[in-house]
Length: 243
Length: 137
Image: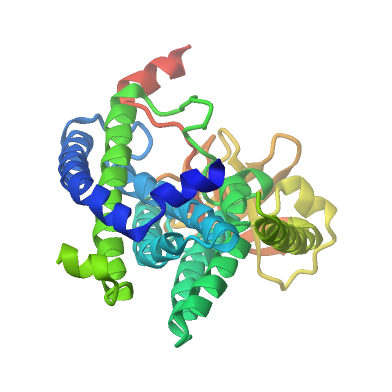
């Protein structure tokens, strides 16, 4: 049953058809929530008692690093689908999600460094949180490089998927690094179980920014995976009908 | 599930376990070496050779900051042990008493001579009015 389900929704053709209608929804909702979240956060949310205005980069930093990890997790699920069920679409999705993951991880590292200068007094320290996030960035680049280094694309898909699975071990390490070791980075403000040590006046715009960035990244992912599907399946009949 | 798929799934699980196991072994063997800094207790316990640049981390003890020109002297505590620190320079804005810091420098004869000071901040964010109220309680 699970196999039938996977095969029904896993053809590149049905993906292209479904996302064509979904794309404007994700883009419009994502961008408008980002504008709302950032305007609220940057202009109307109160200052922080300790950090003053410099904390406001949180509205960029936290959403970025959340999706730096989530995109990798998504790629790992796709890698499982590709390696076990041989779903081609899953490999296409990994290949088109990786550049977005690399970009958002870089933004996370950059915004964290910029935040570090006025608060910590340094833009970089080799603490466990910062280093494991840098490793995540390098993983994204490595995945893309590995895929690019084969002329046999099926082989490239498979080896890329294996590397994605190996690298997923890093995700819980990033998450728990601030608890396992002493770091310059503070522990988590928001827990998965729903607790938060951020005042609601700052938390609401933050959550809106997180959801907004998520939807925007899904829209970006749809764009990039569609264009990749068109190049990979350009000899297929259904593509010609579509174009 | 098809036999071939089952085999592939098992292979994948083995790959994941081996990679997680290998990385876990590395992390366990490095263990406290992955810490960014020594706490005052650890620093006093470990027999450190002076002349190595190390990091000390903890809270700035309340009422311990003394300024003399550009030289700042204070105590770093983990609420068990304390280490006196001297620093000549400009600390970050968030450097204050009862607040976390990381100092980079040399531990010489029970005194930590800091070259650089970094301020830690905690995971709480709140507007100034709330902060004042919490202080009063």
